Amino acid sequence: MNSMNDDSDALGACGVSTQGLMEVLPGGPLLQAETLDAFLHLQAEASLHGFSLRIESGWRSFQKQVSIWNRKATGALPLLDECGNPLDAMQLDPEKRMWTILNWSALPGTSRHHWGSDLDIVDANAIPLGYEVQLTPQEVESTGIFGPLHAWLDARIQTGTAFGFERPFINGTGKIRPERWHLSHRPSALRFESGFDQTVLRKLLANGQLELLDPVLAHFETIFADYARVYFKRNEPI
Ligand SMILES: [Zn+2]
Image (cartoon, rainbow, N blue to C red; front, side, top):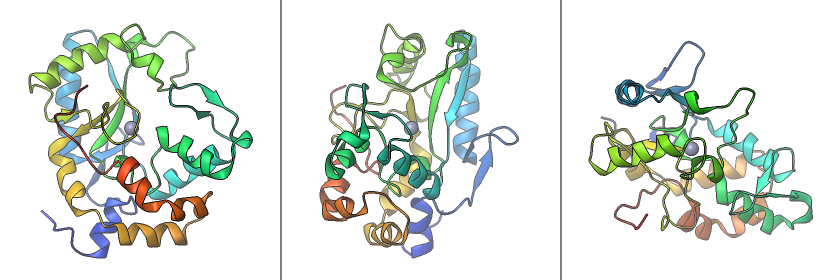
């Protein structure tokens, strides 16, 4: 296993390398080989219980996260408050817009999707005809369309039978809103969690075409402490 003590490895943790990634299906999402193997086991188990696990998002590049960030910053993508309700981005000052984006989207370079160990999932069997998946709190709460899948997953995770997958974003994980749709393959993620380099990230951000760069750099330490997805706090109340 690589050590994470040089810039190229730290850049990989920020999503600027596709080394070691595999396609789930031709042209489909990318995951680490070990993550993909575990996912296929989880998917097979889920199918025995009537669920059809589908990956909405796997590995994501730094540039892709910049694109998501910039579109939310400019109102081209929906901007949601902490309860999942839409806001008008242009009615908010730049700093407020930045904090609002951080509820649901990682600062580029700090997304766990940069690692190939983390994925967003849905139950394809539960999607009504013509419905467009949003990945909102309403979809994954107990009465939502994906509620039954997540109740089943909770039981698997609690009993250690989810093939290494866990939920990194639960109440008490900094200020990140709980994201039940997001799973992390713990064994695949460990080396990135421990090898993250803030200095490399600062350089990437300063060189990127990032909207809201001024408030980001002004509040970098706070953002990193409260919103970076690189941490995985365990034993917090759900
Ligand atoms: Zn996610």
